[in-house]
Length: 262
Image (cartoon, rainbow, N blue to C red; front, side, top):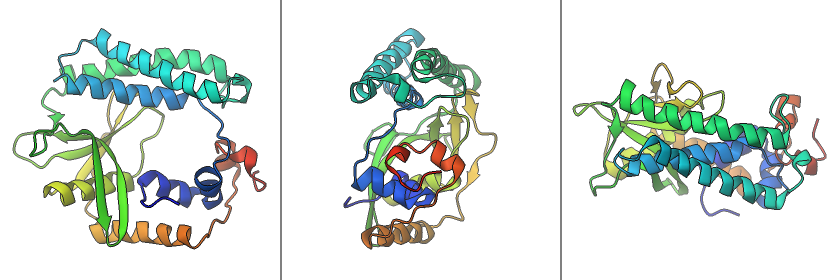
């Protein structure tokens, strides 16, 4: 059992505790999906471009994407070489979807660079007091006895006078919720003494952040801690009820091992 918690653990448990059990405790086989390596590769290309001081060319950043996409796709294919067992994306079956997402990811890398170079050059990566750029920034905090770890995609300085904001990169259709960003804000405020109160999602399909910042002030450290404590206590108690629903089960990566699936 993990000695720490994370946003992804909490979200998975809240969505379906039995799926959490199958995935993280029973290590059941997970159905692959081509959108997974696409998302990882866009993140890695964005990180490489930012760490270059935004001097890396578009072609170089796209090369990072292509290399990363191949690595992660091959890793999944090594475990599940038959693409018939992969998730489909709408009408696109596994192998077709894997091929088309190479192009989608390359477009998203271009949109990312063009956004920061043309639409919002004043938005830059925040620098920690130790001189570290706050991209894929690791954190490890204690929330009243529950250890929470993770990585913050980006902390962005909007201008030189205001507090930075936390930003997460999303390559799919929908942004996340405010809780994920709130955890990042709490972590930043704990580690660096910032007073971050807002955050947003940079959406790869649209090539820009969500229209409005998420107000994170409602998520105090105490409230965030309470959420993690509830999930941590349930996991330690071995409480893993199934909550099957058609929409959830259809996209559940461990549904093949679940006797409750719809």
